[in-house]
Picture 1 (cartoon, one colour):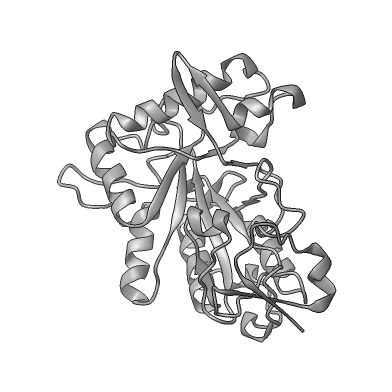
Picture 2 (cartoon, helix red, strand yellow):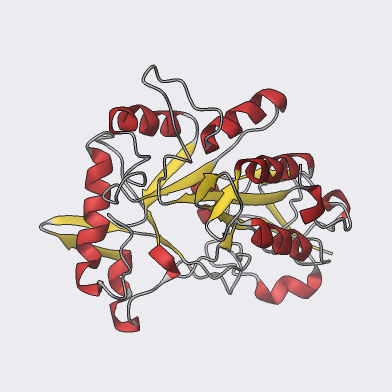
Length: 304
């Protein structure tokens, strides 16, 4: 394990409760042989997950994060894990349906056996019309089985456009790219609806066109995205923070240097969202009360 990349600062268990702190949303691309800007080595990916498990990070589903209904154990830091581009390296299986232990899902499965309390969740932002091996995990004969597996095992499948289109360059095709991505997935999961879009390259269309990311239609087929994820390489605000913006949800690049910077940042006092263990309350420092968005908040606020 490459523990040398991790910050050896104050353990997360010693951080102060702060439910208005920031949450890491991490983004993996290829799971491969080496660490590069857009690839996490298999050993590195496994090490990341072990670090998160052993340091009381709590994996969230998309709905748990976006609703703000975070049910995490006391003292833990919620984390949202995402995967972009639907590469076969993320999820590979043989013709008999056996998962390749060296693919991303295979590594996760091995850790579920090693750590019985590990309950992985995450979001796969897919590009079903991209070239192989990014065309919905590459293996044509296994697409349906893989998608069904992800849904059955608590993962989310969301929109990354049909073929990873730069929506600034192809702003005339925003509706087509969003609708066709969902329709492609519905060939295998007929009732599947998408509510979130991760922008390819993290690039937005011109300001005047950004409302089209949220809702529109293509050839009579409508869509509505409640969440747009960017690629700003920063920690995310929680949804009931006044600075939270569902059109600009921040994510962190989960390469080696990005993970290291994230852990250093989270270990700084007052930065991380640290759960109080009670989903019906929000416990925050008194100095943070002015940042709380109370509209529609159905929770008791406790301050210290």
